[in-house]
Image 1 (tube, one colour):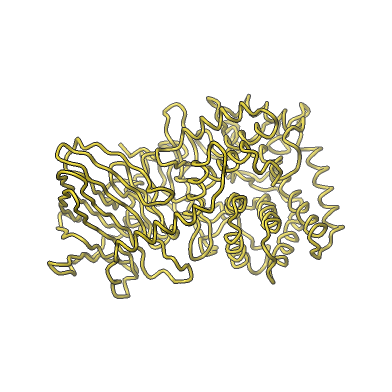
Image 2 (tube, one colour):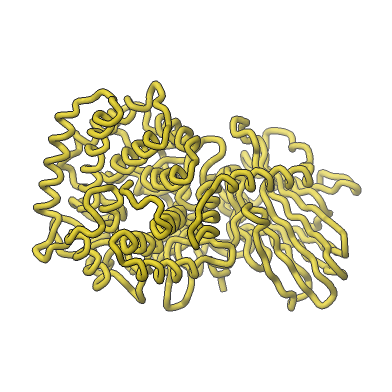
Length: 599
């Protein structure tokens, strides 16, 4: 039986991330970047696909865990019949993002609290998504044991305790007693370079803890959900690459939207839409410098002909995200195929430019100064949107069927020209404002004519009476008010046709609109959007009740995946999911009276 998704904790150094189960096993780690190949991939298969288990020998040991304050230092406490001990897991954050990645460390510190606790270590190193069995050798001394494993361009050195080979895995025992402290480290480095010096763990822990706490201290939120907001913003920072500024959509690939199904996608890339929305959530809480970093990242990624614009890129702006399958991995709970790369990178999604323009306009309002290239970049994107004005698209939900004119996408085209006009009128920036006003007028007339049903609600696309949850975003970008009669009718239709046990699905998969087999569960971000819609249209008690319920779906560490299955009470999909956490932040802000104005 696979570990439930909600039983995982996240470790992060703002370059990559590890998932640690409640049972003390690291089942997912890609090195040195989030979108690199894995070293531990048991999450998508079995232990022999790469894992690092560290837990008491006592099978009846009781476990509890928490983060050390507003950090990603994980403290797991084990209580056995013979004593109490803790495991402190963390990934040191490189304080200077300008330094290139020459090493990446993961630390597991075993601390004795009382009595005696014996731990067992089971380490299985598998490079390249478990396709490369490493060459492993003992390279240390009796006083300073170390194990070096390498395959192709990658290598890791394991230090701290003597490990013994046991049928393609390495094992050890650690005895913790009151006051003792034993460190184990795994350090990645390029295999063609010498192994880095041993990590000085105690100062590295202090620096990492201090870095996260200092970052979190800047967050101000007076609402009842302030702790959830802080943890969500920390997750968004953890998914933002410290070196490149790229913001990943999630830390994992191929965690299924339907257990046992085929809806399994790689989310370790930078969706322009998700990154823009993430940035806006951070902007709303004062992190303007991240907007500057991301704007520079965007300039590098989009550089050249706007006609080559993609909806997503690699963490450093890579364009080639070729999608392929890994048939040797069994998949989470048998959900196949396991995919790396993402073919949706080749889709045309008309809303993306609008999302970027809305966010950059918000950054300008927040005080981000223009750079030499910032407005020329925006003008290029506006020109691209004008060239694609009549083109159908695959929509926000990345429909893998024929393109359509999705209402949400058309509204985001309106938002593109609205923010273009405002940039001229309110900020004095140069541009053909009369042309942009005309395009804004034309797209609004088109939406009002073709994107509204005879019953008075907005529709998913121009050739249907169905709705989708993306319509909840229309008031957020200022297209209409939350209490506009068309929005109220849309909400009523969403409640009738898209909710399951009070939670919102993205759209009705049974219509076949997405061209994919199977179904999916309610989408957490969509339900948070409904909270915001309720709050902004006067349904405050409904908003509070739904918000309270949604926050209860987070795991004990405050982490959320993409979807939630109310029947089984389980989190579903890639984890942790940026879109879920940024939607939580917006919903909490709306309930607290922050950010009620359109984006």
